[in-house]
Amino acid sequence: MSNLPFVDLKAQYARLKEEIDAGIQRVLDHGRFIMGPEVAELEAALCDFAGCKHAIACASGTDALSMALLADDIGPGDAVFLPAFTFTASAEVVLLAGASPVFVDVDGRSFNIDVDHLRKQIEATAGEGQLRPRAIIAVDLFGLPADHAAIAEAAAEHGLLVISDAAQSFGGRIGEARVGTHGPVTTTSFFPAKPLGCYGDGGAVFTDDDARADVLRSIRAHGKGAGKYDIVRIGINGRLDTIQAAVLLPKLAVFESELEARERLADHYDARLASAVTTPRREAGKSSAWAQYSILLDDRDAVQGALAEAGVPSAIYYPMPMHLQPAYAAHGRGVGSLPISEGLSKRILSLPMHPYMDEATADRICDTLLAAVGTA
Ligand SMILES: *Cc1c(COP(=O)(O)O)cnc(C)c1O
Image (cartoon, rainbow, N blue to C red; front, side, top):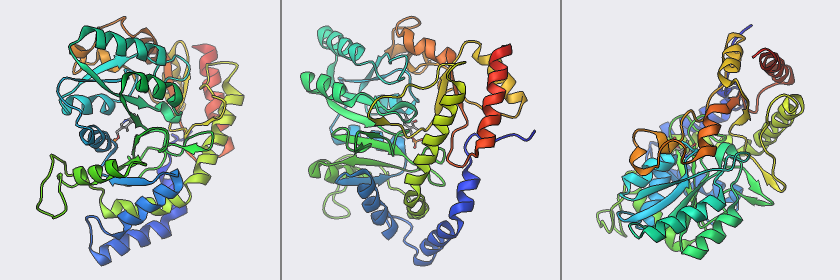
């Protein structure tokens, strides 16, 4: 049988081809490739969608995180707490800013930061007296919003900033509150395979704070002040290309229907798979953006091999937690120090997840997986 796509961007393009092609053509015609009118239009549409006051479009989810750290002058001597079970970008930006990452373990079922362990790590760091606890990067892994109420409480006790890394969760909700409003500053990514993706790199920062938004806009453009050549702080070249904004506008217009389709696929997977493997945790009142549908299983590697043989792609996010990566080892405590993250990296497997999968294909994936689990 033919190989299935892990994420079907071609099906989405077939649906939106007319609008996307016309949008790109408009940019080619007006020629304002940097900060053209589509960027402001996208920022307004993102604010409407998320229900927040400011959306600052930028060049990637990684730049969005860097901008959020720079905006609060987080740097040398500062400790930034973040989950070990995440993508490298969440950690690298801390070191690029000159600050120090302190890795925190995650909850074994939600895959998000374990707030009890977060408190312990904050108290231990404060007690050691080497680093000043400054910020928490709370990652909404696989699209499920983290426990932002408990994180905010822990942050308030210690006077820390919460940066919400929503690279995977834009479109998710806690109650009626959309991702983008769960803390003082939220970042997301428009990398092509994220729930809302462009055709290259892109990202955004969300905030309701006018002063922070001004600083973020300045940082995005080399730290400029009121005049183009007034440089009032250190910034980056962090702008989103106008062409990418033109690609995102029609995609955002259908995003809600895509989120519903992702939810239906997750429900279907749950119904077929829950008796054989550990399916993702659902949390009351929360909606995931379903960037990934990730299951836990023993014999993960054998099952993944059997899936591949049957043309069913799968992915391991993430095969190694950050505290064990060579680049970050000096900031961690080695094997055994964050046991939940270490265990997950051996048992996690993500299945194809996108809004354009029909039920027959979903069933083919489930049949193949159930057979593989049975024989693994
Ligand atoms: C993708 C991702 C990023 C980085 O986004 P880019 O747009 O690829 O720079 C940051 N954090 C997490 C959790 C991600 O999944």
